[in-house]
Image (tube, rainbow, N blue to C red; front, side, top):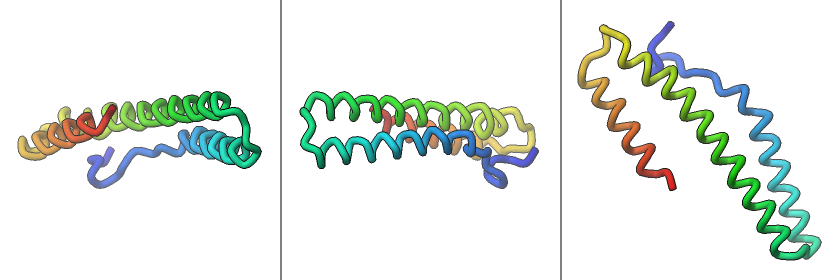
Length: 97
């Protein structure tokens, strides 16, 4: 298997989830156009937020179990590359709510 910097893992399994989120957003657009009750819109927005967080978690899990694991298990990867991977993870987690 190639190092992740050369070949990134596939996230194609997430496409159906992305399509579902896009459909939910379109639904909210329709609710707003139809002037639906605010709490109903907010409930749908909360569901979208939850779906996006789940998508993020899946992409992160793939990254951790492929790219990060590969970097740290390889004897060919220099310490500076491993340090870069740690720094990358720190930056990712800083951006999380």
